[in-house]
Image (cartoon, rainbow, N blue to C red; front, side, top):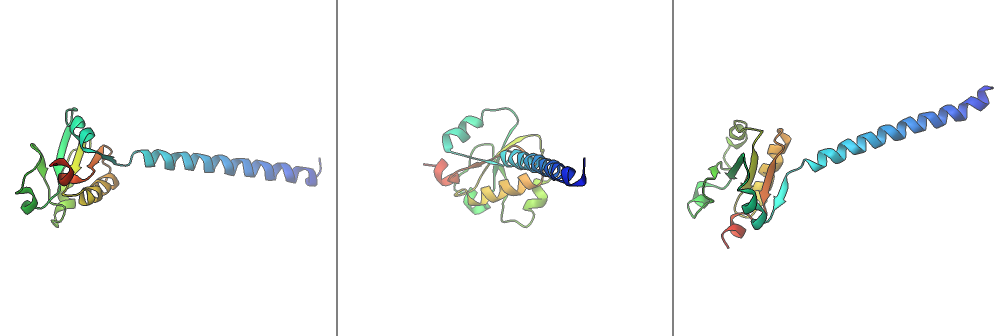
Length: 133
């Protein structure tokens, strides 16, 4: 077999290896995306509150919480400079139900938690505004 005959075969094998590696990386990226926090509507959030190992996390300010909160929620003000330090003390094996006033800060909190290795994090869509209706 001459070099001219082997070159197309080597080129094919190199392309096949590259394709498989790309598919594996794509699969890993997809798996990582599926571990992202979930947005839950009020009925789903309420239903999930009955599960085991649940922690409800209220990331609103003390002034907002003064107007009411979900019973049993841990208060951890997202706007406080100590927020990120404080959530590091939380158990990563628990499932977190996170809410704020409208769902924006809690979504940011969920994303931060996820980046720090929390794998079971859920955001209440519409936040306290949706909950209290």
